[in-house]
Image (tube, rainbow, N blue to C red; front, side, top):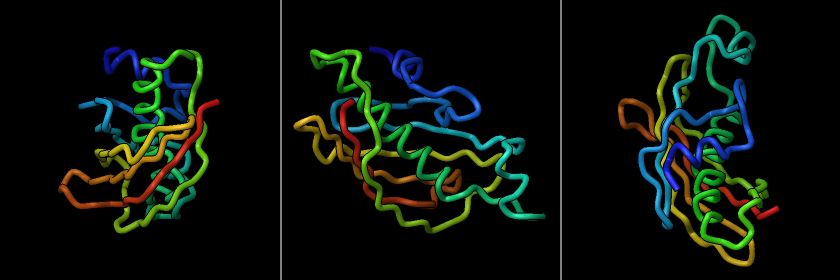
Amino acid sequence: MTKGDIISKLPYSKPFLFVDELLHVDENGVEGTYTFDENLDFYKGHFKENPITPGVILTEVMAQIGLVCLGIFLLNNELNKNASIALTSTDINFLKPVFPNEKVTVFSEKMYFRFGKLKCKVMMINENGEEVCSGIIAGVLI
C-alpha cells in the first residue's frame, strides 16, 4: 500500500481533510504534514484580529495522521479491509500556538495494536522544529 493509497482511503474530504502528505509509514509509526490555509473558516472567529488554530483542530490533525493513517496501513494486513478506526480517547498537551499558513509535521509511534484497539504516542512540531503539542491518542476498529 502506497502513502497515496492511505490518504485516498481516509474517510474525510476538504474542508475536513487535514493530511497533505505522508512522509513515512511502517508498522511502528507514521510521519505526515499539513499546512493550515489562512482561508479556513475557523480562523474568522478564533480569535478576532489574531487568528490561532483551535486545539480541537490540532488534535484532529494528529488523529488523522497519527492514528487513522497508521490504522489504515495496519488494517491493510488484517482480514477485514473494510474496517476503519474511530477515536476513543485523547490526552493532549498544548505548548505553542499554530497560526494561519503554518506547516506542521506530525510524528506518531504505535504503543500497541491489539484486540481491535490502536494506541499511539503523537507529537506535532512547527516549521522551526518546536514542539507544538503532544500526547496519547487511541482508537478502536469499527
